[in-house]
Length: 450
Image (tube, rainbow, N blue to C red; front, side):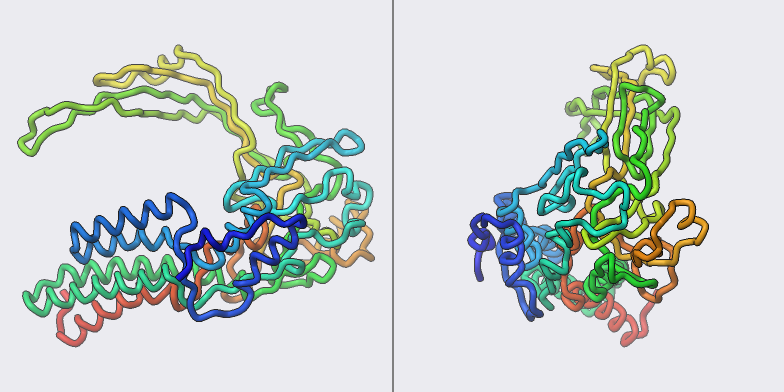
């Protein structure tokens, strides 16, 4: 067993080489991945959960503390992403310079699970007059065709630990029933197991859709279910600035889909009493409280496309859900308390604000989508004056489709970041299956149900 921290690769001069090298250990199918935490907080979680289990070795405690420990153990794909982040910089944020005609967009903010891994083309490299044409630089550097797609191991140290903790809890429930006839723990296993089984099944279904469908380039994408990765760009003119609440001092630039809201935010501290078992007050603490009142809002969109360097494909804005926070503003106005009344009880530090927040997808964002491609309407092509000799210009990406078992997924980042929590199907489903199987088998073989 090897500590994950020792696997982090030194930074390479070429970011694309760093990605390929980091992915090398997870390109091929594997039976088992064994990796220890690669962060300080990961080790803290393992140590704390181990101490809790040692002090309170009850099967339910083992299950809960074991879940914390399992969460702190990385999979091979997570480790590969950590290696890439070590080389390219965690949470790369791309600042876009203005285009040749003053085009402006919001920065593409990177996080641990979203954003760019390699700097994408700037606005002045986009074809504003012929948006569907390929870029001179060709396919985006971090496109899956260039870097490859990771493959999860059948089992990981995380899944092995989950299997063990599930087996311990299921055995405990069976033992209690065998010795006392009490079915409470069997029902706990059955209900918890079914809930976890459904949750994990939905995750596995999503993972399989991502891993089984190869990522197409724009110039080779065909009608039907499709997986694409590219840069969000306008397909007509540049988007007009969005004035939040019609205020020219609160602007959002280059937004393909957006929504803003205005409301009143109230914050205060409230004294909460602490009582003993007999109900006597033994003290108390000041706790933060807040409340929000929505006043008004608006939303909108602009014609957009996904461009991967080989060409562009029109994007239906129904795919651009789960927007990020672009900006927010607030101003203090304590008179707003008159609109709702001050909180009762013992309070202090009351504050009130006018607040505005803007959310959306900005031009230049990375878009990874597993969705559907459908033919575009002839009238729409004519209205946009689209050159129909460019194959990718004749289709549109949308959420609507009928392929059996295909899960639509849209991620603000590369395929690697969308798949970083992926696990093998058996390892992901077996822990909850053990809980369900043992409880059901015990019920059926003993003729007991209610």
